[in-house]
Length: 182
Image 1 (cartoon, rainbow, N blue to C red):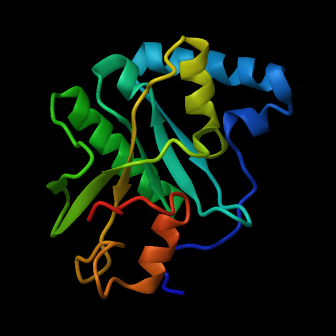
Image 2 (cartoon, one colour):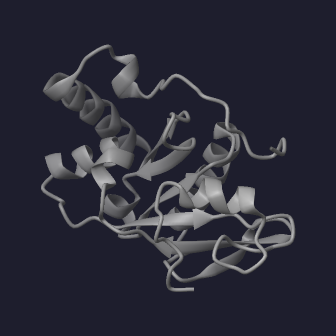
């Protein structure tokens, strides 16, 4: 395991789990916290530590509502890295740039492209619960979500032949069929 990708197990510290609540009380608490951040900043970020069956992941909430751009998720890397990258991309989206599924950008990581792909709706609530419940509470059942992919050190993505197995594994663990169009 390289030091660039972390498989450390973290206890979830999201606003839902940290609240000590469960069920509908937790959903209401999370929605209130998320709504306040989206109202103030136009989006918020949710970071989740790795679990036995999922890698660490970070995602935006509110981009779709405030800009019409798909919300974004990044998985498998250190939380601080994912948070910083998604924050930067969200600011670019608010400034009018787009990062749509099926596209790549050379303007996010210095010297490396970044790719974006659509996500299947299968198990979305189980992976991005706060996003799902927030939009459901607003009657927005048809929100859009895209996954951001980082390349391996050779600029290969998980769907490219020869991609480093570790990079492929941690990024596709959340969404097994993402990248299938490539």
